[in-house]
Length: 179
Image (cartoon, rainbow, N blue to C red):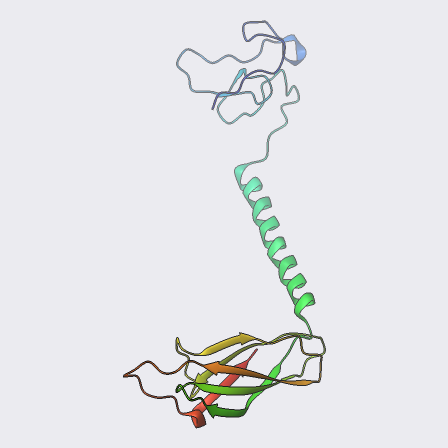
């Protein structure tokens, strides 16, 4: 709120403004701001006193300051989006299918997922194997290893056995989606 003076002068010292006139002083009890540089009283809204700002150059308004900040934030978001697009361009799409499935002795399922990278860059896919394409908490979700463009790889993943009392998984109704 109050700024300390960094100058060697004291507030009681008679520093003169440009033209030899005496610097502004508030009337007793009059609201005022303080000079950003030396701490002397200034009229409300003035950031520098007459001694430190003899030409009476106005400070930017709040609208100008906030507008500049808003433009910087917007430019930052646009730059981030352009960078993200450049970095992720050519990744995917990934085609995925269930290549095989088997029921395990403990009641779980083992699923073989075939994933093809149809993009133009080396990339890994995020895959989800679910019952009938409906997402649930017991879906198998995994990341593949890096797949070269135009190549296909197979990955084997296991579903845990169904919870007692829950409906059993139908191996013929499994669906996979990779992105």
